[in-house]
Length: 97
Image (cartoon, rainbow, N blue to C red; front, top):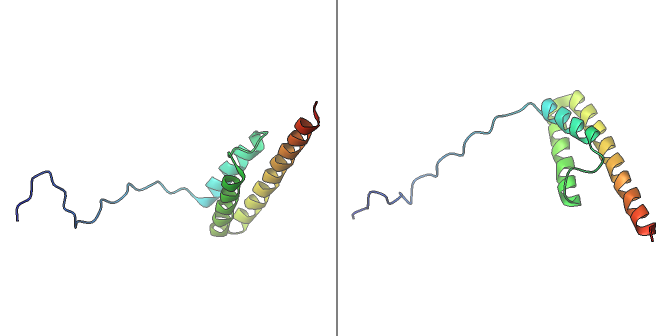
């Protein structure tokens, strides 16, 4: 059987994905908290994405121990603040003539 020089080997393993630099869970949680404290609206486009980010924060918190749990609690407080602001904004928009 002959192969053309440019034909890929169909049975070869795919190339490894480039390694993404690992960040410490506490660093990721601290960065997320800083972002949420700095904004007036949720930084995610919809509820599903927001919930996915909350779940990611909980996962990072489990990996980070007690300090991670404290940061996750603060992140959830900020998320609730931003949800409340969005609800108030929607209520004001609905009440406006």
